[in-house]
Length: 253
Image (cartoon, rainbow, N blue to C red; front, side):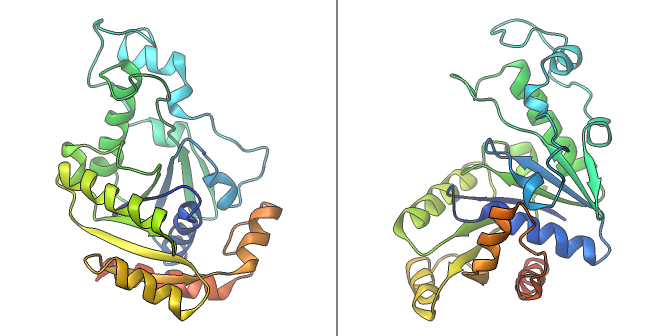
């Protein structure tokens, strides 16, 4: 199963990714969690120690230059458009409690969407992760579908958009759906997060009638406290894991 998770910044996207990874791992699946968000804090949400921090692939200048046979930052030159990436998940990842974590990063500069060695490397890596890995792959993405293209969208079992009660969150979700449609990615499901009362749930259902909801996560101060202490959101929180289990069931149906 290949999942991509996105949503407006601050809606709890990484919390949902961590919950999905934990539930799948607890059910015996091999899990590869990919941090493809520039904020890059999935390691913390999965409980990796603070001294275990991975350098994003996008920032590995020497590796990119070696694999693409080019110069990072170059424009218009010649470079390999099919660099080798199959060995990267094992070489540049950490494994903890049944979850393998890899930090991919993104190209943060003007013209980041152009054809350049860095972007070619990342897109090739995404294609390998989605098409060549025999496990549950969960992509924690920024607010969009930047890392996906037509060649890989078909491999994504479901695009999960995390939303919270609020107009800005819903506007981002609508934009994401438009971007996803442009590359042929139509299997989209929503997760409502930070639900304080029934009115919040009804607000989301009323304003997003064309989206299927996979589930709703209640606002939980324990998750906030976990974030402050650097602990995973699922630590000592069986209710969170129960709801995430229901969401996983919805993904598979």
